[in-house]
Image (cartoon, rainbow, N blue to C red; front, side):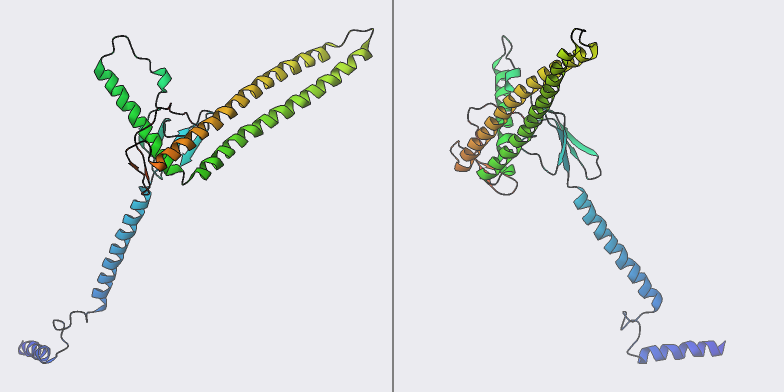
Length: 267
């Protein structure tokens, strides 16, 4: 017992005389303490990485369907989609927010006896929709050349469909002529029913293709006109000739008060 007390007293005296004690230099600790600190540092780094990943995961995607039923995804809403029904998705594909499609002005007919308050609300809605489209124009295009390029791409897509339809009609017409040339070879016998039915099928298909060609030609002219209207509006916004200011997300500016114009549909 006396020996233990002596040992403790001796150790206490050594610590008092030793300037390299644990209290004087707390960083000089054993391997176990170092391992504990390493775990804490690793946990802090893991938290930082998770926070960074969470910030990146917050960036959203937008999903919308164009007038042809084609589904599109992008990291921001384009001019084509700003007034269409769209959904904001997380990077994991979870729907965060839905926006209904804006109804065209032509479909909103004022009811008989509509009061002034309703008219004011409708006017405010029109103003908000026009401002959304103006902001989309400024954020989607940096200059008029980009609008011209987008127009050329949209029109070329329709032109490719027109060329395909024309080629198909030419092919069907050639086949029909071949069948017509065979008819005299069957005289005086009647023309086989299979040939007659094939000619009827070709005529019906060619008529359908001609209707499609006419519709596509009209669509191409409409798309070109809408892009021209967007270009004119973009020029007015950049020049600030319509009053007010809209600030885009990247710091560019444009006039906010819309001129008298019909909201264009998706291109």
